[in-house]
Image 1 (cartoon, rainbow, N blue to C red):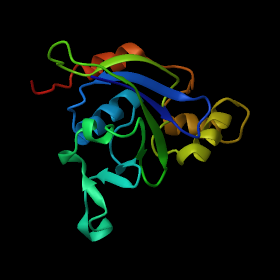
Image 2 (image 1 turned 90 degrees about the vertical axis):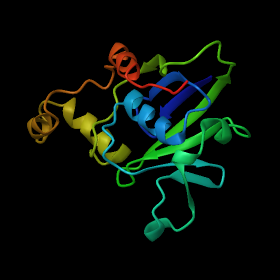
Image 3 (image 1 turned 180 degrees about the horizontal axis):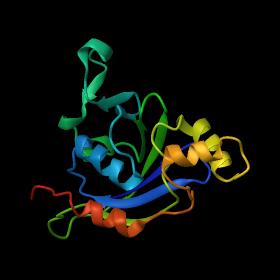
Length: 181
């Protein structure tokens, strides 16, 4: 079992989560788990980078043989020689995540689904323009007198609290994942 910590880089306040998955999980499944724990919808490209190796969904027309197929690589392979790696979500917005392996322990029994442990702060809305756009979004949302405040509230659909994080909802969503035993 791998106890992982994921941090969204270049944002304030820091958005982070900790969760546990089997080391046998594929990077494709880990991508889906990361979307869930962070609060992303999954409509964008992504890439894992560990050292000089990149893993994702290969596209021979775009990246040739440089990107290894994430469906064929397990977390255990990625973390064999390193304790940190990067997950990039949404190439346009550039959401860079640092993933740290806090510890690896033997499984005591089958792991039916990922387990959420702890986390803090709201995930930025999708398509906000990456870290700089998120910073601007927070400024506008916190300033009712800002000329773009009402427009931003309507675009987002509600006010936004960057400190709000619903750990119970994430834990519940992770229980929907299943692992083969």
